Length: 115
Image (tube, rainbow, N blue to C red; front, top):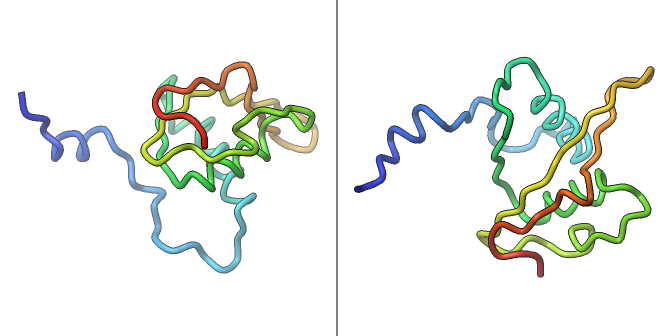
C-alpha cells in the first residue's frame, strides 16, 4: 500500500495556527502558553495531540514546563533530528489563570532520544 499523503494532510493535519514568521510583538513564552491553551481548548476534541517542531523549541518547552527542581535530560539536551518524544501535559486552573506542567515521569522516548 502506498501512503496517500494528500488525504493525510487534508484530513488529519491542522495547519490553521501556522501563520508564517513570528510576529514582533510576541516571545517564546507567550507562544508556548498559547500552544498549551490551544491543546486544552474546546476546539481540540482528541485525547492525544501530535505536534512537530524544532528541537530547541522543545528543549525550551521542557525547561519551562517541567518542575523547577527536575533534573530531567529534556531540560538540558535537544531531541535528535527526527526524534519523537511522548509526554503528559497537565493543566491546573488557578485564581490567576491556567498553569501548565509536563509530568516528568511521563516523558518517554519513542524514537531517537536526546543528544
